[in-house]
Image 1 (cartoon, rainbow, N blue to C red):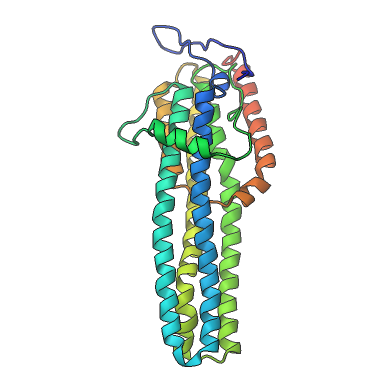
Image 2 (tube, rainbow, N blue to C red):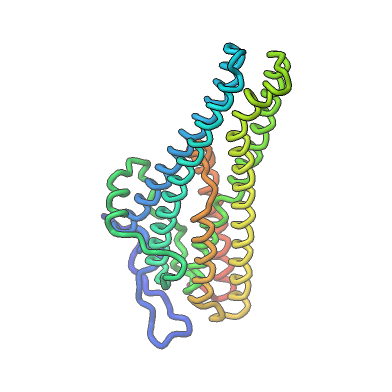
Length: 316
């Protein structure tokens, strides 16, 4: 593989010997680390496929249930109860699988970050992903070849400020996306409730039949929509809070050269890992629609930080 960036020696900060590992911009494009990126993308994609299938089944069930209740009016309670049980099982089985895949993907991305940042692994926080898991997921990856240059090139910035730039890029990427998806989810939830009320009125359901045949089967989907709104709102807030911590360290580093250590970066990395492990799932189509814009935004903000570091003598 042809590497884009030349080997650079990163200056040491408060250490007894020079730090000679490759710059992040170079290391991230090595084949073994690209395999990690491919693996985590594949696992996240697997999780999103299960999530999408679960949502489609929930939506389909909530449409079929009241329709069947309208057709088989004498069995409305039985129809509503059966669909409700099926939809609850779909939710429980699907969500367990999604969470496992998300944890595995987060662990692989943590392995990628700690390797190219050259910071320690927090053994108390996460188990290391196995080589078999990485190899198998990477082998199955058939997505776009946009894995190189995952982080902006901050190799001119003194260590560990270059790590902070990459960590901020991680956090800033998803904040606005989570907010946008949460708003969309809220509108969909309101539309579902209005549609249920309209079905009840047009179908001339008795109150008891309406509750059992329409509202109860809608329960899993409404719960999913509420949970989705809450999860994306929480993810946006957590990422914004962690980004503020990064910027507080950055400002400290600008005022007091050498004040920021690898330990500080490890603390930020703990926050990032915990956010990734519970990060709200977003469909690929929604993320892809905004990818180019967010990529440009991330690169420009990194360039601003690099320029600021130069102004304070913290970059070559």
